[in-house]
Image 1: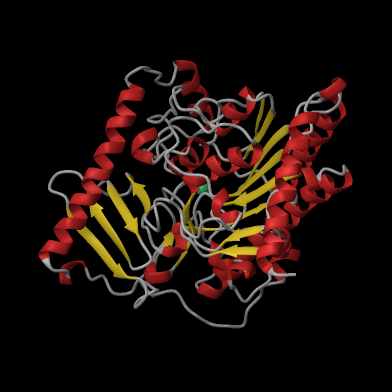
Image 2: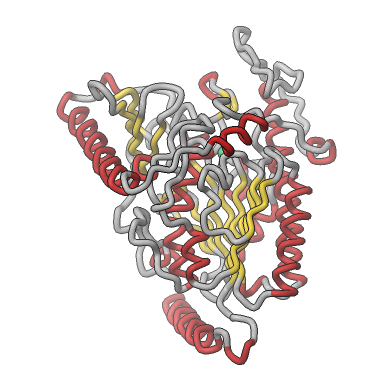
Amino acid sequence: MEPANTRRIFLLTIALASLVGLSSCGENGDRDERPNLLLVVVDTLRADHLESYGYGRQTMPLLSGLAREGALFRNAFCQATWTGASMSSLFTSTYPSTHGFQQNTLTDNVLGASFVTLAESLAEAGYETIGHSTNVYISKVLGLAQGFSSFVEHEHLADADEVTAAAIASLDGWHETSKAPLFLYVHYMEPHCPYSPPPAHLALFRSNEIRPLPADFRVPPHIDIGSRDISDYESAYDGEIHFAGSEIEKLLARLQELELARDTLVVITADHGEELFERGEFGHGRTFHEEVLRVPLVLRLPSRIPAGIALEAPVELVDVVPTILDLLGVPAPALAEGESLRPLLEGTAKERRKGDAVYSELHIKGPPRVMLRTRGYKAVCTTSGEPEMTEYFDLPGDPGETRNRAAELDDETREGLIDRLVLWRRSMIEKGETLRSQEQAPLSEENLRRLRDLGYVDEEK
Ligand SMILES: [Zn+2]
């Protein structure tokens, strides 16, 4: 059969499936047949350490399997390279300067009630909304649990097996008692440091390669694995990914056992990546390099997403919520700054309406910075005081971002880019300030006390 005909038949099939879904919704007290949603966020997972993104090691076989049954975005990017700001962007489809969750202290941010989260949109549409968080930033007190009818805050950095067991219990509980469709969000903290995967997962990635850390590099205590070899850190990081993947596999297996796999939109992504000593840097939240900026994004919903498609078009985490809601037939919030990727999934568009422009922001560990990435270049500007371009990389010619060419640009090009980024950020700030001025919700004394008891107040993460 001609590919065009195959696609036409597929689109017709999904249109009919949508109609059937709508007509049977809530009929005779039966289970609401709208698709469920499972959103899995794997903290700190850089895309290029996954075999489905070209890595040489089989770190997460389940993701390759999911991509064969659904769609994989090869070029997905986060809007901040640390958890709080990035997850706020993911949940609300707004950029950091709009939602304002930009400080990495636990007391200076609250995601305002005027921002509409994915969970709120789905709760409004009649979904049961259950969340499992293992990251202290994604918490009720900081506003990121808005819209969840049940939100389990596991211990910060709780192990993947504990989270999976609890998430499966939530899934089973919902299945036994509820007729509403389910939104289940599960956040895994592997492969966030410290890198301490169970031995069986670590053993898969032992390496004989010797690549010593620079002599003057002081290994911070929270990442020290008792080695001064970069290969050992990479192996431990990969072991953590494998551990997370094996646990997500159990969650998906349970969906299968409950015969829900066909009718559940599964989305797997990450909030940001990790630098593993490239250019001498370790960790995340400091730079916009590809290692921290590029995240995996895989979606599976057999009735509505063609199987085995890989998309090259650059996309952003702010596009995820409009896409999910579009696929589930739920309106996106008016505030959404991302756009639905459904036309890309269905092959009716090759590129987003906004094209290949990707924005990301950092307001920690240095002056406020905005990044613009296109297929051709990556530019980073400071936007406070006298704005200046601090970095410019020619991505096609220098994909490893080894040569900062900011000083080599002609004045007109440089000034033009600086103006574009300053104006872009200003428009986001203005929108965000209007929204936030309608509310003032600083942390209550009780919440501050709770965070202090946990030992997190003013502590950097
Ligand atoms: Zn994170």
